[in-house]
Amino acid sequence: MTTSAPESTIDLIGAILIEMFEFPAEEIQGGTLMRDMLTDSLMVVEMAIVLHERLGIKVDEEELRALTLAEFAEVLDARITAR
Image (cartoon, rainbow, N blue to C red):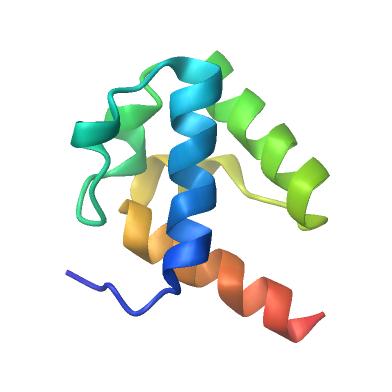
């Protein structure tokens, strides 16, 4: 499991999961696949929109389906750094 993404990015994603989707905080872990937390296509689209609004970066919906939370946070951090 990859966990080198800064906690702040993981915390941000976790907070969105809790706020918007009422996902249980105790189940948010770096090794959990995003698709297991975003269980339908509307949730995936909403997460992509919220992350774009809050971070100003585009998120591919396939990334939200294929990556773990930690991997996805690393992708976001790389995009933020590259700006």
